[in-house]
Image (cartoon, rainbow, N blue to C red; front, side, top):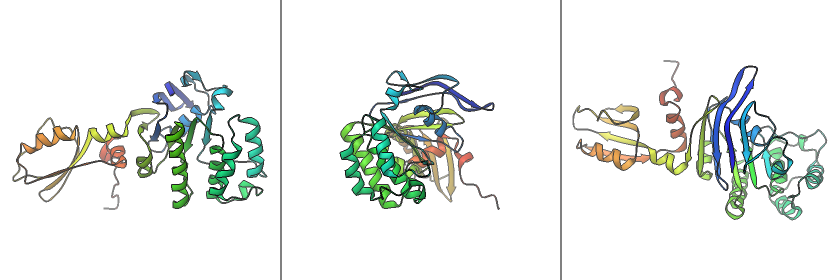
Length: 297
């Protein structure tokens, strides 16, 4: 289990993390989302022991990560911008990781080589961005990590390779019970793979829940009423728009309870649907403040 407790990190007086508390259960595939500058990458660099917090704690199974080689040896990490020394090749990095990480699996390395099909002796930094990401996955997956930390992991990969990478990761999560903590702006992709979600805003955790709980607590409705009768005042409406008589509502609450309240109005039409992760993200962060705005009219 990964735990952040009142985690604080400042850069030149700016609080990148501001008393953040978060829990990633063992074996979870946890998606970390938030607007740019919300602290996602800063948090991941604390989880991997790159940054030391100014206050609070960052623990893995109860042990601090900072300057703890035993904890770090259990982790794989792929940052947003993959970096290797100028002349380092996949073969160079294989030898390095094999000497440093006790979990490095040569047999797995060879099997994954059939998936990625990259040259072993070409400098990684001379490869394309997508190939550099593939090299990072090849090497990090060969560590057999118990915890895999990923920051925009499939950015730069083509659609086929994205599916291949996620397939291997999800197989590891299912078969070996690894914990995956992933930050991405591709919310549609996270929705397909994550079972837990945390939403960050301004260095704080706005909420964290299982994806199913998030989807159960917000509902999108289309409603047409026979006249101008008002909606119930205690209905927690986060967003409302209308096209003629047809209204679209985003309501906080359980679907069954909300539908029952609206059925009492004897609507001409009423239909409900769960929100996707992108819609949940927008309305949990304040609704219209984060919607697309037409500034030209």
